[in-house]
Image 1 (tube, helix red, strand yellow):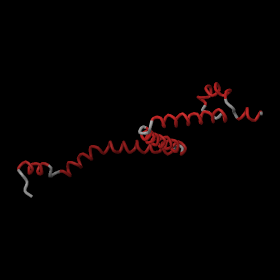
Image 2 (cartoon, one colour):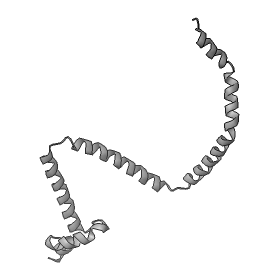
Image 3 (tube, rainbow, N blue to C red):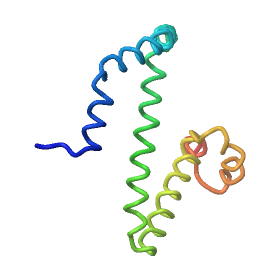
Image 4 (cartoon, one colour):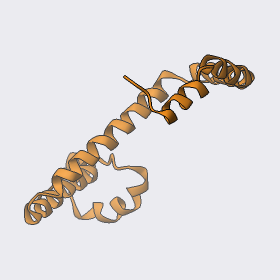
Length: 127
């Protein structure tokens, strides 16, 4: 393969390519050492984090990913079927919370308001 005039100039210009790289590495070496020291201290700190935290974090990421997949598939669903499904799920979950009284603490005032109108485990055992 024969090189044109401008290409020959480029080859001659970069003949000392290894010298150029070694000079760049020499100027970057202190920064690399400092970053490795910071990375080591960060890794030491991360090793002290309990395993439960990593499990919870992984669970949250997995739930988020599954939610996105689920929402994309739901967006293509028939809206009437979707509405009936959501109402049914929310109703069953709400009635379970009223019966068992195991609702999230933030929803306790709302459940306390509607609980007298529905049976609960405490009122059933009194009969």
